[in-house]
Length: 126
Image 1: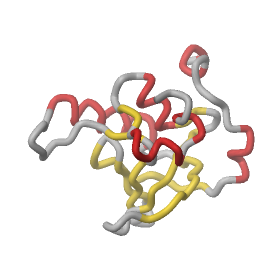
Image 2: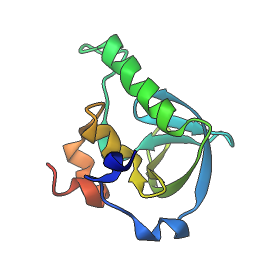
Image 3: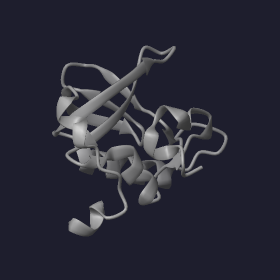
Image 4: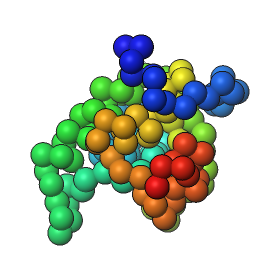
């Protein structure tokens, strides 16, 4: 488990961030809290299930990986904004682990270049 953290940025101030409990993730970059808040993970994009370039196998893998990381867990949340669908755009972390960065590192997501400036870790990786 220690090797998991070697390439990741640590967030020493994340104790100051609010916590939410994730109920489940319904897409590789979208989750819901037990309070019903819908969260779109900032700065990343994952394969779509329903689109012209749909890839059901990769979509399911990204969703399953994210669920393994956060479903049923309490995580820190850095809320950035709300999108036109009413979802919270946010960055999640679990201890020193930045969830979005981890998904990119493991190949389940890519940096969404248009919004990379919203996350400190992604600015230097595009």
